[in-house]
Amino acid sequence: MGIEYRNYFSLEDYTALRESVGWAPLCPEQVQNGLDNAALLTGCYDGDRLIGCTRLLWDGGVIAYLGDVMVSPGYQDHGIGHTLVRRNIDFLNSQLKEGWKIKLVLFTLPGLESFYTELGFSQRPNDRAGAGMDLWLG
Ligand SMILES: CC(C)(COP(=O)(O)OP(=O)(O)OC[C@H]1O[C@@H](n2cnc3c(N)ncnc32)[C@H](O)[C@@H]1OP(=O)(O)O)[C@@H](O)C(=O)NCCC(=O)NCCS
Image (cartoon, rainbow, N blue to C red):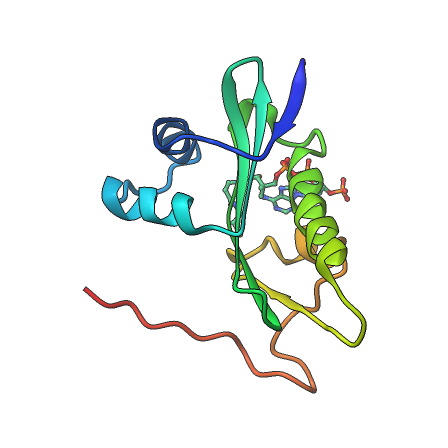
């Protein structure tokens, strides 16, 4: 594999990758907004083909959100997913100033918790924190 990481990916590449992991299609306008306004896009390419990605939301404050963690089925189990997530952690660490702290949060699909706990994430709910919650609109 000629694997390369870039801080960019297009709407078309994202849409194809999303389809490859079996996630439902989204409104292109909303996806483009999400790409334009992310704090960090990380794409993993094999040549010109996007085969993995993450999208980080962060406003410079205490909370950051990691979404769209995907690796194309033919490329899974080669450490690409972990590398993608680690690059986001490294980016946020590089942004820390004296006295700052950042909490990186995400939602995991059932059964994937160990993928994230291996990277240092805490599983919720726990003694200090309740379960994550969400509300769909529209
Ligand atoms: C989850 C996903 C991103 C993992 O990417 P990946 O490149 O295959 O992961 P890695 O090769 O870095 O795997 C690292 C570890 O996670 C484990 N892992 C990977 N996929 C897993 C799964 N579906 N369930 C449980 N553990 C998994 C691997 O066994 C490996 O463990 P090890 O370090 O003890 O050997 C990828 O399988 C994927 O895109 N799945 C479909 C979309 C998805 O579910 N995204 C996550 C949303 S929360």
